[in-house]
Image 1: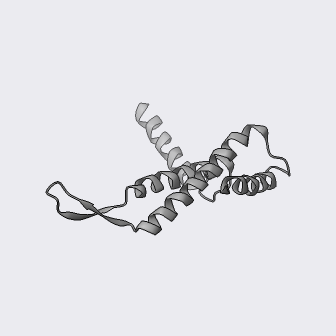
Image 2: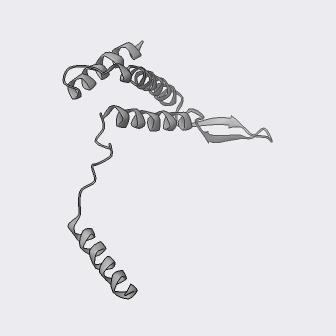
Image 3: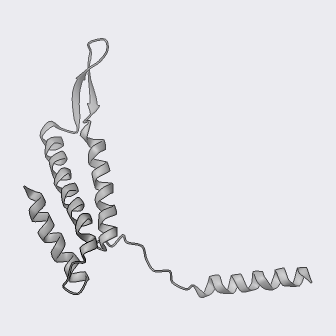
Length: 120
């Protein structure tokens, strides 16, 4: 069961970000993240084993190539994993802090001056 390994590794990463202590409120998120990683691995192994394109019998009994049905599930797991990474602060894709842009402030000030001038 890979989930137990993932849980211990994720807890180490979270503890490093929180001063050596894993907050209790993150336990469920850590567990869900680990299980999502395990499911992603299962989907990947199955897709690699079967191939991305599989043969399927069509309505007129002809054989056609279709995308593996687990590809969509794999994408959903990947998206869920990124969400968990952002929540736990383990991703470089986490939301950046808003940086004060002096250019936009100047533009806002000029717009406000114009509005005040036109009003009166």
